[in-house]
Amino acid sequence: MPASRLIILGVAVAAAGGAGYVAKNMVAVAPPNVAVDTGPKEPAIALQDVLVLSGDVAMGEPLGNNIEWQSWPAAGINANFITRAAEPDAINKLKSSVARLSMLTGEPLRRSKLIGEGQSFMSSILPSGSRAVATSIAADTSAGGFILPNDFVDVIMTRRADAATGGSGFTTETILQNIRVLAIDQTIQEDEEGKKTRVGQTATLELTPQQAEIITVAQQMADRLTLSLRSIKDTQNQVTQEADYLVSGNGRRGTIRLIKSGEVSEVGARK
Image 1 (spheres, one colour):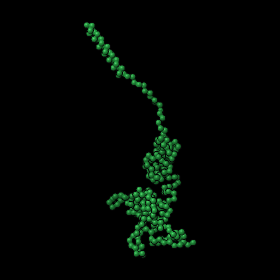
Image 2 (cartoon, rainbow, N blue to C red):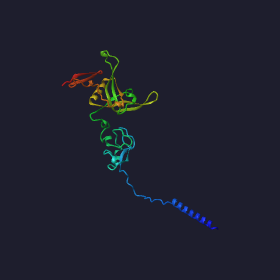
Image 3 (cartoon, helix red, strand yellow):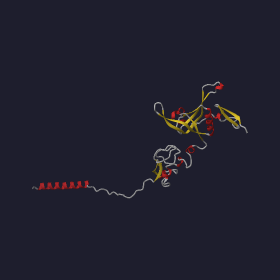
Image 4 (spheres, rainbow, N blue to C red):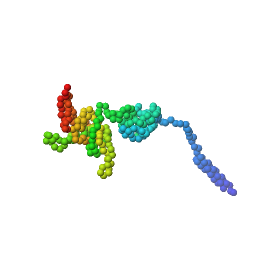
């Protein structure tokens, strides 16, 4: 074999060996060392178990199984929240408690929203200084059954005109305005078309002492009391007029108010 061919063959073999070495180093790169920590890790944020609502609870209903523990950031826990660290058996103790206000799923439970032990439901939701007065209503005087607790209404009194003074027909007057409904008894009835409707016959209203006297007099005078549902936007409106003439005025002290045949009169009180 000529010497020139041997030289060319040697150069080719050397080049192939060099290329193989470079390719091997590029493919077989040693993986970096990765540190694996198999021990337990502390959470980045400190957590505590807080008692929250796992289901909606309406006003006046027991909590039942609608409460559970949920992890919350410790820095965001209010002093009024119930924590597992402070009360580990709170679920068993509070499941029979009754809600004095409506509560929603995911809301932290507060004792201020529960009826205290030995207290009645109505006295618990009644603000200080207010009175709860029940008044009879008919199916057609309760806004078609749409009036519910915590709605606000006007109370309208309707009575026959005094025939003795030549009057005829009926007179209507709004005697109380923007009154909160505390409770209303409702039953399900079917109309002539088979549709089910809610019908209330007694509404319990939140009143001031004077308003309680006004509606007591109105119940004796009226042929009918009607509740007129108000918009929720009106709840903050200041009431400037009510039928206080029924219970107040000059000479109230030392007089007795008589109601006879739907008419109000005053006579001097005997000492």
